[in-house]
Length: 317
Image (cartoon, rainbow, N blue to C red; front, top):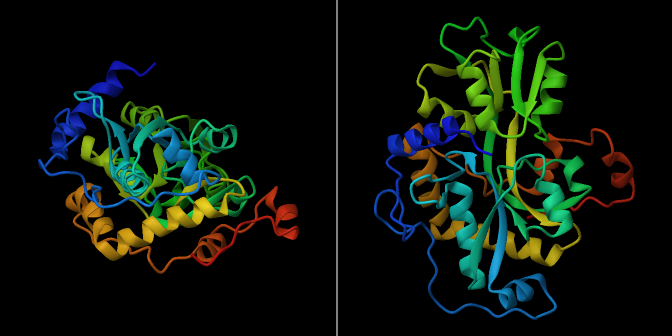
């Protein structure tokens, strides 16, 4: 059950960003979300995933509910909003179906794909070789970077200062291994949702939070006494999670992402949810391929055997 404090924090954030939307689902600036549908929809064969989704009339998409600005539940309207949600809307529009957004935290994203709870994952998920053993990916659609967040006045100025410190990150996130490697003497606090990390660093239960810079930006907007410190720890290419072996669906989703680059829809979504608040230009993901992403996260543990058997998807999207 979500705590009252979490709801108050999200409401404060939404108010600060000016994102409280009408029940009709308009964006916070009164405009329709970027990349709205229209036009003739291609009908896919019934024996494809795309055709099955069209027959069902909806696509089930796993997203975060507590990670502004990428995915969060608006407590006033009950709508799910954010960058990943608008990308999901583009995919649903291309299929001519309704999106159904399902809460997917870091630790259950892959299980949800494997057991059929969702058709697709858009949940700030970094492309890694270990994950590619169990699922497939679309081409990268966003490039984030790992950073460290601390309260003002903290003596932590970078990753080298995390030894002996309590550091919060998401259970099942790529930062479990990143922090184990780069800050092996840190005391990791693994939680199911980043809203928990936010509360823990606010009340002093942990000394720092480490995750993607865009997620930490959402925390800073809610509490300006928090700040990012140190150099970038990692480069985190986000990909849409696809059920293992469904190459045709992966290519379809990658095509929608490519079209969003070409049409300018991706830039609109970035400006709406990220650029407007950071004042920074996007690190363009168009030229980033799956091969590039896998090189950033080479085999760690259980993917080595699969790599030898060439089970890891590696198209040049």
